[in-house]
Amino acid sequence: MPSDRQLCALSISQMNICGMNRNRVLPEAQANNVKKILPRPLSRVNGWSPPLHSFQAISWTTCLAMSIATFGIFIPFLPTSWKHAAYFVSFVLVMGGLSIFHLIVHLITTTIDPADTNVRLKKDYSEPVPIFDRSKHAHVIQNQYCHLCEVTVSKKAKHCSSCNKCVSGFDHHCKWLNNCVGSRNYRFFFSSVASAVVTLLGMMVILLYIFIQYFVNPEELRTDPKYKGISSKNIWLLFLPLWPVPVKTPVVVSIAVVVFLLAIASFVLLGHLLVFHFYLIAKNLSTFDYMMKTRFQKNSHSAEKKDPSVRKKGTSSQEKSNNSSWSQTSPRVEPQKFLLSSLSQQSDVCFIAPAPKITPQ
Image (tube, rainbow, N blue to C red; front, side):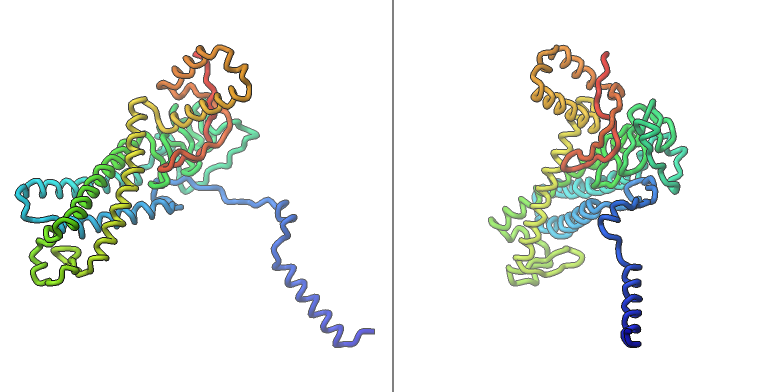
């Protein structure tokens, strides 16, 4: 017979075991069989709706830092005794005007709700989006009716799963803006990119001039009257003429190099994006149409590689129909299921979209 002490220890251990089992996470084998009930997602109004994207913080921080460095540090280095002072004043005013213009159109692009007209008229953004049931409907949008937004939408509207709504004239979903780009805000988006490219070009011109003068004639960068009281040539004044901050030469050079590299990287990326959208405008295509066309061509080439006999079956007639079908009318694309989730290095699309199947003309 066990003693009273052993019985007491056994009862305490059983209590601890019960307590551990009560709080312990389910084993992996059992957890896989448990269906998690997630809350239905809400539609996002614009780029300021949660959840905010980390790319937004990166873009705003970079833009703010480069603007402060350019207008607070580098432009005051420019000589005030230029013979053509009018050109200097005009250049500074243009730089400032472009920066303000870029800020305004960037804010407008982020703030505008790009949803389809019927979605904006009916949509209650505080209500969750219904869960799409593929057992009832084969596609999200059928006959221009969205089963998630529960409204009739325009022909070129697409349902973006990132924003959880149908976007009128859908072009792409931009993570840097945290908003969709559609027919309602495309012009502001294009103006934002174009103004950013021109502003970055001006920044690089200023920095190149400062670098050249620093190695050729540094005194040309120290023409401000506040330098008269500074005897050391290793001391530079930042944020002239309002709040002069004395720093040593390595600090100024380091800031200039970092800003110049950021300007080059941003100019290359945004310049590539601007040229790409110039191409799309010339071809009368949206980014979505371009990606669909590219995907269709890749699928066709892969099918030809797997089955060479496909190439022999009327290649010329197929090419003519393909080229004509992608000219201007994207509504000829019939829906099939797949998920398209990436656009380019600058912007991304994530939506339930139709796979291309060209109908005969």
